[in-house]
Image 1 (cartoon, rainbow, N blue to C red):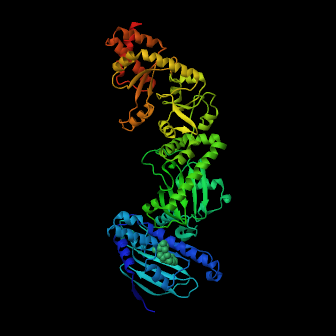
Image 2 (image 1 turned 90 degrees about the vertical axis):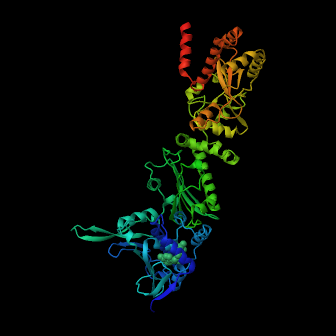
Image 3 (image 1 turned 120 degrees about the vertical axis):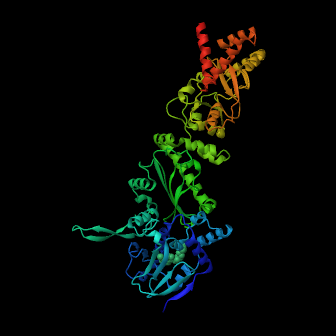
Length: 634
Ligand code: ADP
Ligand code: MG
């Protein structure tokens, strides 16, 4: 039969026009598409051979060849898979049957026919991707079990020809006649063996069939010889049986795959079958990336579908607080040609993501229970992330619940950091709340004047030294039935009789000191909302308390560090009526509230309260001068 010229289906023609005439950002993906088709063809034949052994005709070793040729300016991809009949070529290549490609065209319609780089970059276009780099494509194919072969040729412009061909063995050979720019022109040179080799490794490493290439080397007599090498590692580690994989193999894999230089702190090999099927290989790197919490860090998992690499850094599986997890998900239920937008909305992806998150948190809980040292090492690196998780899930009770038992904090007991459960477990009788104090480090908090009374009573205090701590606990509010209470908030009180009595006495006293308190406030000026007497101090003279709600002083500092000066803590100056300085203050007040001594005294009291909280006074020189003047009087 002589050559016959046929027209592409109208839609196909349109698509081809687009591919040929567009600036395709990711030109190299043509190879991934062709190899993926070759692999599918091998799969199909393998599947058929399960019930029809004869069809293999003795040739059971599936393989894919990628052969660049500088002289003819071609790249040839061939396989010994199932091949196609003449009708199948017309059906599969001349017509668009694929859902991904259809989706592409629909999207294009929405876009009113405008093709921008981004649009076309989002979709793989399967076989047609060949026309990104080729000016002419030939397919020579022979269906397994048939005698005749067929040759399809097209320049991608509306029509193709079909003719009978000679082919010894079954399978498909695709010859790309490269556009000049791709063989020594301005673009990547696809006739370069090493270039192609690296592309195969990048995109198709885990294809289950060997992808072979010819490499020119020299034998011992320095003669040029061609050596055939398999370029891909072939077996996806994640498809193997967990029990057959050695820990070193996992470690090597994570290092290679995710560019880690140490073995991971923990890894996960998760498989699910049933309504939605996936395999995931995840790891917690030994050390947090230096930029983990910065915007230039790109979180996300690699996505595979049937072992074919689809995309890097897919963010839609895991919540942001688990951004430190590296890994991949392979799911046959996800189509190969999928856009990031479609992925985001995919219920499948959400389900897989939820399952992964649950698995990860369960594992963390297990480590906390059984391998405390390891958990603390983990916490050191990633504790902040889990706290961010609590904060980000402010309105999700279930999520907060899953995270609350994974938190660790240093406490006034010293030693190892404690979980909230451990803290509650060792609460002495009479203590009803979980107390927290925040500051820049444990040593600073320990010396806060408010700590004294709690120490005396034997009540343990959780130290919040990481800026995120207060935000996370604020969101948590309670641990089981125990309220979480900052010792710096105005509503702080311990519930024992002794404290209640002391508080009542101070309140009584305050009534007789209303004028003094008012005048102190006036002397200090606008920054403070109130001056009070307090029973929470023992040997300290002053402290700052903040409002019952709203930002604390440390939160205010955090906001300020982010250039947000809008959120301010309510500042309440608290005075210890039992302190020597209070008597001095009363004495000065009696001499006249407008006297400079009284004003200066008030100013210094406030400055002290600020310093205790680690806040620099606005004018340190002024403070130094005042201290110097006082010292001169001694
Ligand atoms: P998809 O692979 O998503 O189906 P493609 O555009 O990549 O879409 O390929 C279209 C069809 O062409 C395939 O479904 C297959 O039937 C056929 N095909 C492509 N390449 C080969 C090949 N190497 N061997 C056999 N059939 C092939
Ligand atoms: Mg394909």
